[in-house]
Length: 88
Image (tube, rainbow, N blue to C red; front, top):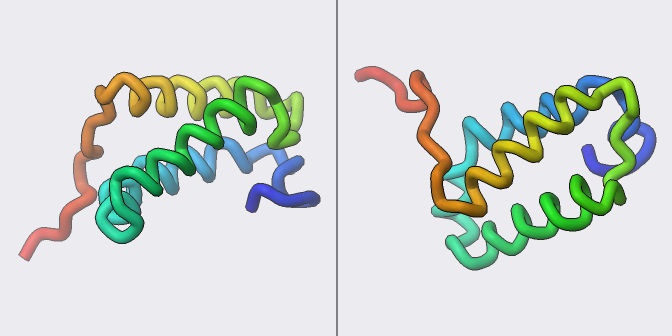
């Protein structure tokens, strides 16, 4: 998803944000807090802040939403979204 041509499509930052919101805790459990943190840190620093990801200029609002979520994660303020857990 983070490689051309997909990264340049308009909905890409929003799709990545939704993916992270839903799967954040699962991936943290699978890869460990330290490794998952390195990935998110790299995505925030290089992909978003340094604009190396190559997101479309048309996707500015989605990119900002992704950046805000990553900054919340950086501060330890990410909340689990409702509906993530299945009802039994």
